[in-house]
Image (cartoon, rainbow, N blue to C red; front, side):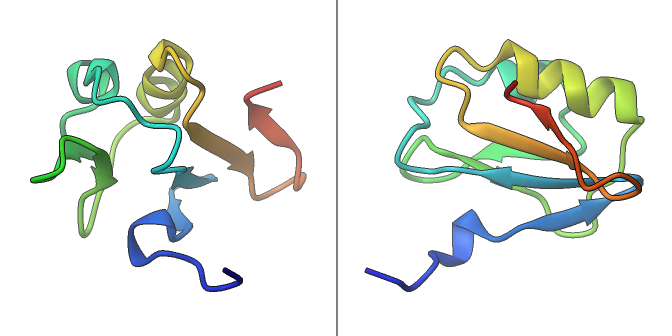
Amino acid sequence: MNEQSQEDKIVQIGKYKVQVIRNLCIGAASCVGFSPTVFELDGEKKAVILEGAEDTPENILLAAQSCPTKAIVVIDTETGETVWPK
């Protein structure tokens, strides 16, 4: 089980690296509400990051923070710090 799912890939968006942990996602879609240019639900009703996604750092962080299961990981590429979840 060392293989990372394609959907769990880490994507660089602006100053953040963002990852959706699919096995934690319950399809609440709050991330889509805050950042529809970055997130969408796939056919399994799990969040995925859109190809070529762009949004403000604030919206990306709000989207991650809105997730009830903390399935979205946000890392600051400048510091290497995990911004969310804390």
